[in-house]
Image (tube, rainbow, N blue to C red; front, side):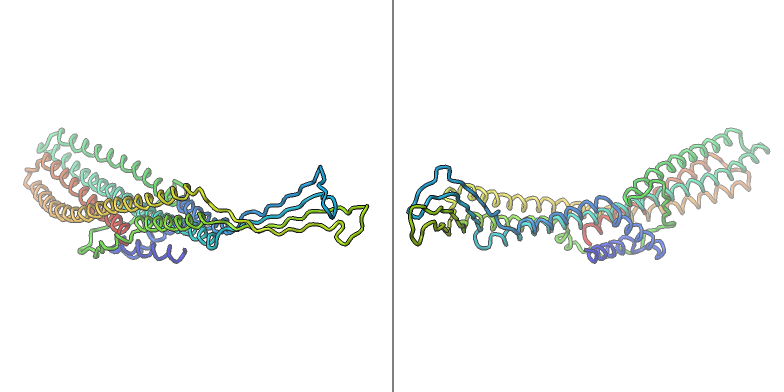
Length: 411
């Protein structure tokens, strides 16, 4: 199980952060490893699997041996003497192969439980990665706001100088200050959202909520995407689980057929006989020993026929559920692919817009030398720059979040 866990984690991490710097990639790798080790949900599924596996030993047995002791209150007289008490032992044995069928059935149920572990680990790795990228986006936005606040402080200084020489009004200064206040408010709100997401992240790792999470800086969208093998979706653990459930129903039917067969019983009766005091012969007081063989036949087998019908219906139900889940996963995968393409388009557009906004900013700043600066234009351009920078960060986050979804479905 450890080898499979390591393989899944390695493949998932490699694909999730294929374009991330090596040092930061190792950081996310180690964080996911902590989550896989400590997360209580994973531990819950592992314990369920162990418990299901242990049930194999429970069903690997035969029915209890029956013992009986009887005392003759009214002693029946026989030729050899009066019967005093009787001791009986009886053992029923299931039909040949029944116990093996039980073991196979329980083992097949345990195998379906194992897929729950694989699914839970994949989901956990995806959740940790997505939370990590949410933290990155939040911190990147805070940094953008910090720089914009700093820029507005520079503009405020220019405005104050312009006011002194009569080239700007006090209203321009107030507008710049109000804009700074708005940005500071956004930054403070983002800080609280970061702390909330950090709590979520630490809970996924099952550690203290206030542990600081250091995220990557300067994440960008790569020039090329890694190849997506959509055919692997058919081998996804969520679908393989239905295959194993189907197999367990088949094993249940084989067990049902075995249990509808007769049961063989072997027994032994011992009867204690008291000697007749008035007679002397060779068998006087000889005890009775009687071996027995019994056979139980399920003449009224409506129960087993009903179970067969139920198994047939359950198999059809499982096939329908698998097809339904496959359709859902295909929809999720296609949406993730399209959303990732959209994020690349958006990122490219925001990059172009941001460059043009920078050019416009330079033009406005240069106009200050001629004494014709318009601080309304400054605020408009600054607002556009902030919008493009925030959208650019969102595009990067969306790209990597959708990548984790694609990895969950195709790796």
